[in-house]
Image 1 (spheres, rainbow, N blue to C red):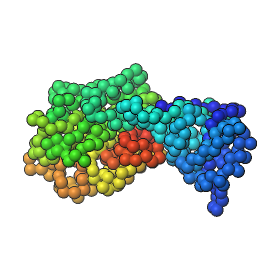
Image 2: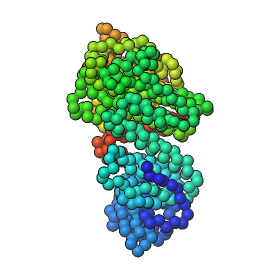
Image 3: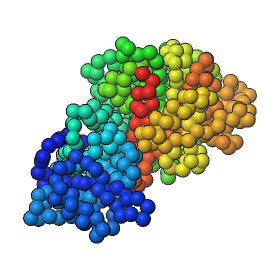
Image 4: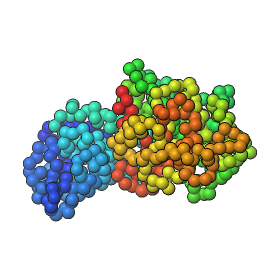
Length: 484
């Protein structure tokens, strides 16, 4: 990960980046006001602007060589209107454009939004996941950020770095091939990441404990695999917390669809089916690192949905934690079964103030909202508004969807309390309605995020690279920070 430090004073960088913003109506772009004191370089950059054809839009980058001068390389960086999203996009574009440099200096205005956006963009845009050392590696190792008052912005830099580090963690967990990643492995990664953190408590339940305590959904989904299921319970418990939030994340480390097996095109990326669990684990560790004054308990039900003689069958009736039963006629609708157990446990035993689950739950998420938006369901307007605000501020996207009671009839079963896998349409809504049945007295303090689509990116755009996005980590941390 890039080293980023705040600097001040009169320095002589070899490579300097100056931000460019759009001019007014019908006006040429201009240099943004920053801490850089070199009037001669600023005058030269201003003279260059017409020839660069820059508009000042966020993410535009141009390089200018100055062999006889200092700095010898001058980069002009479009930062748009200079709000946090624009700086985030600009930082990501800069990380990619200067990957062959070893060190750069960027002159920045002394603004929290500018530093936070730039830092997150630099770190997230430079993310790279590879299991081989072959191929070119970025040379860029350090970025100096020139500001007038480094001390005043030190906490902002630390917070942005923590957010990016936790997003990296979620991306790493999600990108890891399922030949390595199984429930026990995932639990071991959480154990290692949580080790030594003050006020963080961890419990991992294995198959025997799950059976003894009645987690029938987790056991059913994990029953077809040689790698037994797990339930990770990770608890950030600060002494000054006044609010307790439980986060639940779907953790299917690989999903074949079970006996209702998926076609190959739908199965090849199913290593990402634990992205919800990765996000809530990383967000909880981030809350601990930032010392947020809110108690956060994460539940990550982990299972591998495989095909074997011990796999659960279409038509099976599953008894969930707490006693509710569900009939499953499609073993590829497995995520809601493990979430139901964890949510029922949270309601009955943990009794939090708020309950939020994240899950790569349905393909219908992408049908309704495309590749970049999660679907948010909640009956609590304040909770939904707060989550959407945090998600938006962090540069992620979600859209509130209806919990339409019209579709409750789809959940009717002749043999069980609920039908978990009806195939009558409104797939994302019906999945949310099924989960709602396990919220008990927390029904009006619960939110569900179906984030299958934005958990994975097929291309490079903004701060995202191809592969796992770590969706949810940034939005949850922004939201959690408002609860203290």
